[in-house]
Amino acid sequence: MGRITLEKVTKSFGDVNVIPPLDLDINDGEFVVFVGPSGCGKSTLLRLIAGLEDVSSGRIVIDGDDATMVPPAKRRLAMVFQSYALYPHMTVRKNIAFPLRMAKMDQAEIDKRVNGAASVLNLTDYLDRRPGQLSGGQRQRVAIGRAIVREPAAFLFDEPLSNLDAALRVGMRLEISELHKRLTTTMIYVTHDQVEAMTMADKIVVLRAGNIEQVGSPLELYQAPRNTFVAGFIGSPKMNLVAGAEARKHEAETIGIRPEHIDLSDTDGLWKGRIGVSEHLGSDTFFHITSDISSEPLTVRATGELSYEYGAEVYLSPRLEHLHRFDAQGLRIA
Amino acid sequence: MATQHSRSAARLMMAPAVILLLGWMLVPLTMTLWFSFRNYFPLRPDREPGWAGFDNYVRFFSSSAFWPSVQTTLVIVGGVLLITIVLGILLAILLDQPMWGQGAVRILVIAPFFVMPTVSALVWKNMFMDPVNGLFAHLWRFFGAEPVVWLSDASLGSIIMIVSWQWLPFATLILLTAIQSLDGEQLEAAEMDGAPVHKRFVYIVLPHLARAITIVVLIQTIFLLSIFAEIFVTTGGAFGTRTLTYLIFQRVLESQNVGLGSAGGVYAIILANIVAIFLMRIVGKNLDA
Ligand SMILES: Nc1ncnc2c1ncn2[C@@H]1O[C@H](COP(=O)(O)OP(=O)(O)OP(=O)(O)O)[C@@H](O)[C@H]1O
Ligand SMILES: [Mg+2]
Image (cartoon, rainbow over all chains, first blue to last red; front, side):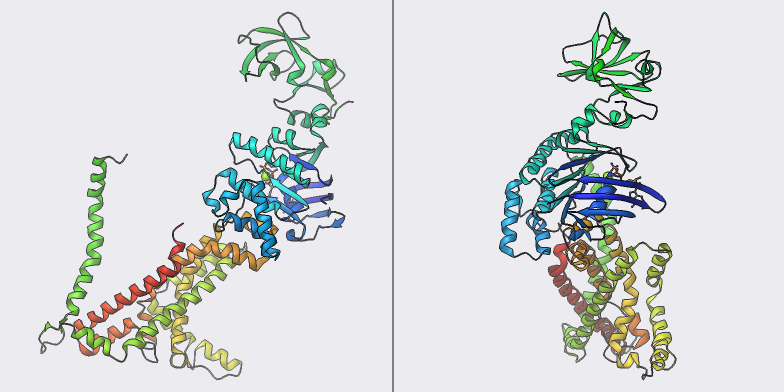
């Protein structure tokens, strides 16, 4: 079981209020991702749940029990740190066994669990090495191994892949998703990587300055962002946001249209623009197009074959059924 | 870019330093060895200098004071190491806590290191340990106890205390820098793994400090084997506080024979090497890796 509920949780460091009152429900077995810009309080929130920081006010409930004052060791949560935080003087085996030894488990059971975790994580050949003799990806797996042997109620990950190179990151991302499918244990995962958030999450929590801007499945957030912040934050490349006269034509203060929902044409269309930089990714091409309707260039996603000269004139046709409209407060108009 | 040319140039440029250091070490060592096989009385014109063979070694070794002095030396070194390391770790942990006036407190803790051994021993002898007017005597009387005559009744302990006081700052400083380099997330991870404070200390902090402790042990041992001023100004070698160094000093003084002292010096070198070998066996493995 791993159901975690935050009720009106706040956190201040001295005078600085990092988390204003915040409510959040995390269901058993869910994979929840916290995303948000740097400094928005993602790590702080995770550490509050872990018990490494004390809440300033509010309640944290784990599986129906008030855990607000419970010390970290008793919350049955396991955390994987960004720096891995492995114990450098212990072998991989001892590292993974550490929480079990602290729990005074008997040696046979410890061995069984450590070997089990090692085989799941492909660490069997490295059990007698020290962390200093491992690659970044292997260290990451040791950190995960140390977390899974405890069979915790929930896993907490704080940007676990940010120290890895791009290829390894893709691999580990799949491994963690795989692990979640297999263990079906609640996981809370902090990242600022778009792709990690979209691909791994059952539920994404978008944070800004400690406030929850929106909670929902990746597709919900993508298809119906609640406000302009979420609209601009989720999706890569970013949604085009246009304010002013053009927006008012659609009875909104700001309109948003995703790059893949604009069609290009040489002859006719709703808006007229001039091609700026083109980014050819092979599968897709991103055109950055300057136009009269907005001071910011618009981004358009087209097939990989399409190509235009720099400075060529084109016509853009947004697919109006995919247009997002926002009011003066930046909130979505249904 | 270590080409043949630049390598020989590097050797050439390092040569003065190497020659200076070698000379610094080898000249006194050779002279000590040379004198240890001779009788040499610079202050007694009536005695002729000459070859002594192994006489000096035999005389020094067969003196009844020899083995007790070795024992005293080892007790003092061991005692001071134990006290400075245990208290040093505690102080370092304490000083690592965020507190008001941290900078000032740290400087105060370092202060004893800047006091000359002679001065600090005199201060201890007269201000703290004096059986009539010392602070300890007053303290003992305040609680209705009989003041301890420190330097004669607990002479060895007193000297260990004085020397520990001098070396505690050094140990604290090195251990403090080591503690500060400990990754806080490791402690947090251990906390989440269910390790209470004392287990975090044993499993995380202490192994992290192993290398710093080794360095403190090695450096302090080198200096503690040759302490002299503290004994000279307090007990003068009486009451079982005669170390090997002090014995050499006394033997030269009474016999006026520099040769005899040199033989004692060679024994001291041998003792230092035996201690070094043991230390390297015990703690030296912490230095690699
Ligand atoms: N111990 C602390 N004392 C004071 N302020 C802190 C402390 N820890 C964090 N903060 C502040 O709280 C805010 C949130 O920090 P937090 O580490 O949670 O951000 P984050 O969302 O994890 O950012 P990032 O993506 O860069 O890791 C920041 O403005 C930070 O300066
Ligand atoms: Mg963070």
